[in-house]
Image (cartoon, rainbow over all chains, first blue to last red):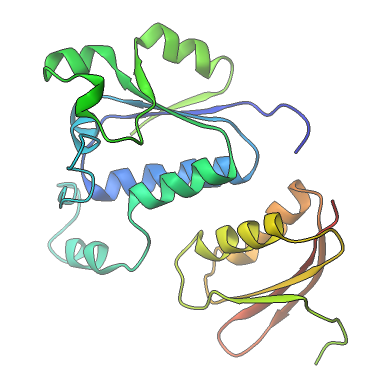
Length: 137
Length: 79
């Protein structure tokens, strides 16, 4: 993993546990394969990263049917916050809060979980993304 | 039985993807070059992920051996 890999940049918009978990799985896989990972937290995902809120129940997305929701909830995989810690442990991971969303919800850096590295604007996020993919979840 | 001597074996059976891979990465990082690591995994994703990571990280995939409902992945730390 000596060559410089293109970063994977994920915009986390949804704040439900299923989507946050799916995003965290992508992040840990990319980090394991040597790609820098940038996460940009907006709207409801930002709320899920507030201090003291990370491990509360963030529900399942409305896309889940009545049959699927209990299956998703019962799956024994790691919590998304733990997957992100693993990603950070094996690779280069930056987790940034969107300045606009922070302003919208009247949040300051100290209101956020320690997983959040900082607050930045969309242009700075795009600069980090450079010529790598950007995915919106 | 294979004739390879395993220095560290990790039983990751029952763990969800990408748990077994992450356990292997953690063990290899703490190990010495030349040591052999074995992961037991029942996760379907491991069948593609572990060889992909081993190739990418430039270690050596020594053996992939199916067993009863799980697979033995044997990897030598090469660097």
